[in-house]
Amino acid sequence: MYKIDKSIDFTPLFDNELVQVRVSLFSVTLVLANESNISSDITIQCKYNIWQNGSMILSGHGVEEVDKSKMLVCLLGKLIESVSVIGSDTLRLNFSDNYSLDLIDDSAMYESFVISGEIFGLIV
Image (cartoon, rainbow, N blue to C red; front, side, top):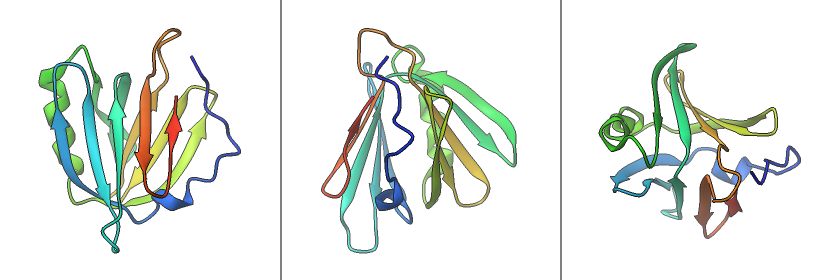
């Protein structure tokens, strides 16, 4: 586990829209774009939870549960409104329409998730 630094400024991710979900056998990639068409990718190889209106609607794993990962399409077209760090192992992305996605750093040996793009980068 790399742990998530609470001092990271996540504002470059705000107002990015989820425009594509790519599901493979080894990871799930969320493609984000902002109004300037600058994109960022979030590659998920860890446990995640999707919430709507404060209720968990899906719990899955980006590597182990490919079938569940297809359900991440419920976030398509949603904008990231805020990002918060919960504890030292969970990154919560709050989307429009009261959706949230928790990315949970659950690996001591491997990267759990990677956020990459022209304006932001993070490896956890």
